[in-house]
Length: 297
Image (cartoon, rainbow, N blue to C red; front, side, top):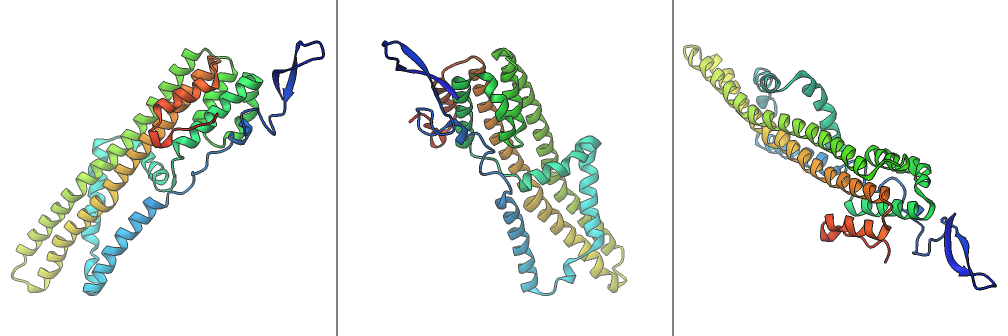
């Protein structure tokens, strides 16, 4: 229930009345209607579909030109895949390498929610805090899904943390998250640079084998296969897998940083007990024009 001071008693004095937030707040829909896990999450079909279609087209082109077995060469595959992994590991730490599979899984499957949905939820939280007090946000933490950054921000608000402290702590966490994403993207980009080079190394190894066995015609074919297929494997791995994943991870990192930045602005505004309309104005100043919201309209 929220307190309202809009009704007059029999003697003309203003008497407090309570509004049922489960139905209306006097602003249209209840803020509780917006406090829920954000829509739009889940699997990002575009990444998986793009990788699958691209690799499938290469496979179809190979099959249309002949049989598949001539394009399979284990020494070339080991040289490109193993060499790329080894050289990339030289540039980073083992800890970075162990975290990379989880980052790739998240990049492949996680879809970033729309900024407008996140902003509407944040303004709804500010509206609820204005109507019921900051402690009312504690009961809504479980309704925020697995959005740990927003949950932490609202928990700091509930704990009556100073606005400047909230802003400082959340910015530190945002910077740490971006740094992790940048390391993962740099690792993928480095691997994308190394893969064609390892393909070239495989080509040189195959040429050496071929030139050293010119007196044995039966060994020329396998040596030439290693030379050509190593370059093919390196080009496909770099340009169809590693570099697109690095770009997608950077894009997701920028999108997630925008959501976190909105959360920081909203948390500071709520902790400062600013009017929710002010919170909406502040968030709209950061959002792109197409994603700006109108919670109170």
